[in-house]
Length: 448
Image (cartoon, rainbow, N blue to C red):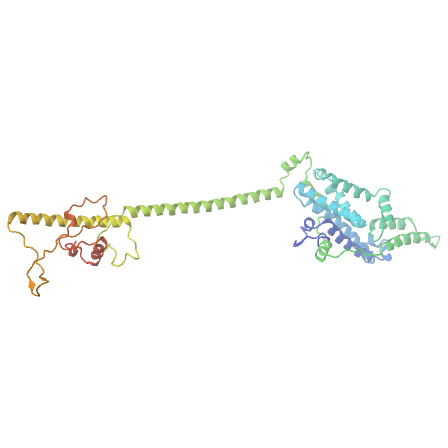
């Protein structure tokens, strides 16, 4: 593939093959197409000017096919140049076609070479002054070389000399032979003084013999089926259509390239503007979607902050229904703020109960001088006798202080708050469990 000029994994079509293929592969396929027609040409087709008479064209099918092929390729060359809307792309296409022409010259395919040169010589292309001036110097010299080689002055003198010195296989320009045949046929009569004009017949045979000597040999090129099929049917415009298209590309009165772009806003420039507008619109949509995501994130953050604020500002409900059930400590960790508030509220309840009982005990002591009855004692056994001795052992009435965490909002605990009148003190967790297990808050009030 690399040697033949084809690129791997490139799909070719009638519109892009000139841009994706190398000039050598295009020249090879053009040569194979026209040389196959040339090899089928017979000497009988070159007599009686049958290719010029509609009623006799059936006698010269291959001559007519080569003529039609010449016109199609030359118009295709002009069309493919004028189809390009911008000057730079036209220059690129011209450079590619010039390189194809040079390859055709090296292959001794003078018929196809003149087809390309005729496409450049078309009036619709030759008037493109700014496009021709923009050609690189090297390609301009190459175009001048092939044009001078196929110059028709002096009856194609340079071309004839080149054809004589080349080695077959070669594909001569058929038009030279057809022109010579027409001159011989028109300038000499068939009969002279009632006899056959053998001079005319010798001249006709000489040309036919020269055509036959170039029908020897084959080109050692591989046939590319897809490109071969594309080059057999080349699309093109007619002469009038090409000239109208040329006036659109470079109108009359244009003095510089800058004026050309001002006067002729090409469709490619418009398409470039459309592509830029589409890119801008796409970027705006992306920015808009990104902005929506950012705003949505901000809304989520603000809603989270609002929820946290609301949760921090909510009052603490200490009712039994709001407290966690028993055994819920393992699966749910009570927040520190809720624990502190509950412990402070329970301390306040204990302090109030203790103060009330202390005041009632002091009032009872002031009114009555008799000592308060001591709590019942438990009889103990004496170590010397087995009978119980009525010795009374007083039972302590005070309990160890309750370990509590001081809260900044709770009042300072007094000594009375640390005395439990009903028994040993309970921890905060036990009190919370008792509150949670109780159905009514007042039932457990005395226990606290």
